[in-house]
Amino acid sequence: MRKLIAGINMTLDGISDHTVISPDSEIHQHYSDLLKNSGAVIYGRITYQLMEYWPTVVKNPTGNKATDDFAVTIDNIDKIVFSRTLKDVTWKNTRLVKGGIKEEIIALKRQSGKDLLVGSPSLIIESMNLGLVDEFQLCVHPVIQGKGSQLFINISERINLKLLKTKTFTGGAVILYYEPIKI
Image (cartoon, rainbow, N blue to C red; front, side, top):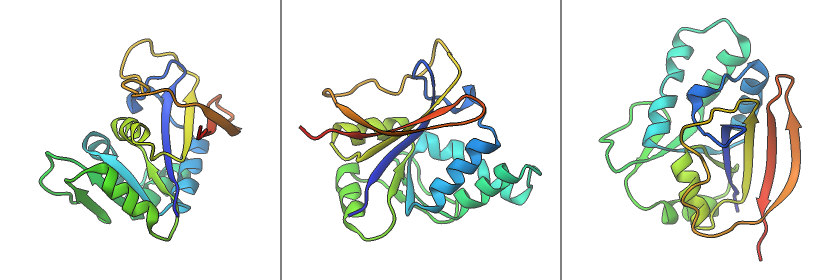
C-alpha cells in the first residue's frame, strides 16, 4: 500500500504561502529528488494554478541547474487536481478529479507503485481530518511572516506526531519528517 505524504514549505510561524519564501538550489534539488521517488502529486485548484508556472521554465530554462531540473521533474510527474470549478487541465500528465477526496485517495493508496504527495494546504488539512496522511514533510524556512494563511487551521481533532528525522539546509531551512501516532 502506498503512503500519502503531506509535503509543504512554510514559514517559522506556520504560514504556507509560496510567495513569502525563496527556495534555493539545495531545496529545489531536494524536491526534485522527492518527486522522482513519488508516483504522483496531488493538488487543489489554487496550488495547481500556481504550479502551472513550471512548464514555462521547461520551455525557457533559467540557467540554474537545480531550478531547471525541478521544472523538468514536476513537468513529467503525474498530477491529480481536485477542483469543483476547473473545467479542464492542460498541463501534461494531469488528471482532473471533481469527486470526493476520500474515495479517490483511498483508491490511489491501494494501488501498487511509489508513494503519493499532497502539496496543497487545503488538501493537506482535508486529508488529515480524514486520517489519510501517513507522513508529514514540513520544510520550515527561516522567515517569520506575521500574517497570511496558516497551514494548521480547521483541524477536526488533535493529531499526535512522532519525529522520524530532520534535514537541515545550508540556507537555514529545516525539513521535519513526522508520522501520525495511531492511538
